[in-house]
Length: 269
Image (cartoon, rainbow, N blue to C red; front, side, top):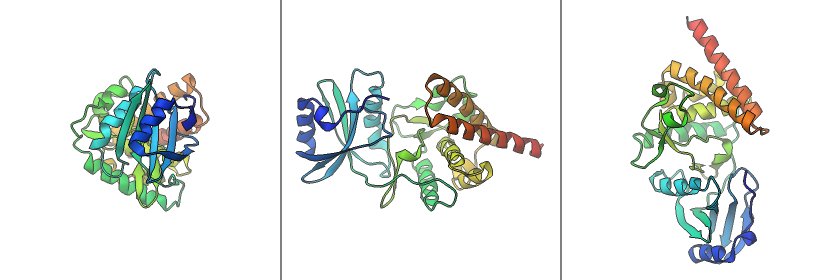
């Protein structure tokens, strides 16, 4: 993860350009964790609060910022609107409308699960067919992990369905669209289903919750089973290349889900 900069560490000319769009910055609140970018903070001005994120343009993943800026106009209002971008002296920053809220809780019995299910159902309806924006097909991103036809589709997907990308305030919002893809409508639900298992749900209970999203309920069962197996291979590879505390529990949850699906296939046979 790149080193995080605070507001005063940004070049003066960059800060001046940001203030030309946002107004004089009186106080900042740095994002404590979760964002894989070099700068992420809420900027407080005399008139409003703006969430600003981004980084230097010479680092390998700087293209993620441009991709998020490009896709924002095509997203529903459950995503904060992009107000402006600043590119100056080797930095690229995005300024979004501020969306206050907390991350939803996913453990069994959480009242937040209803809002997550409603948002996912709305997104699959709204983003199918995929808007006319250039995004990578999911079949390309998962090349070699799964048969392409199993995850092919025409829905704009988020693909990074971690609870930290949801903000629950007056309503639930989904942020950080830096890794969008075009693929099968059920894929985002499958990604968050594994998070439910990690949070304490049994695979059976997690699938029962996921079936509330029509796209998942109507999906081909063999495609979902293949997805679970591919997720194990992907996360195992990532865990070996770059171990992190959260990856082990996620990998274990994926194993539990895949084992459950294989056992259900045996019962059905």
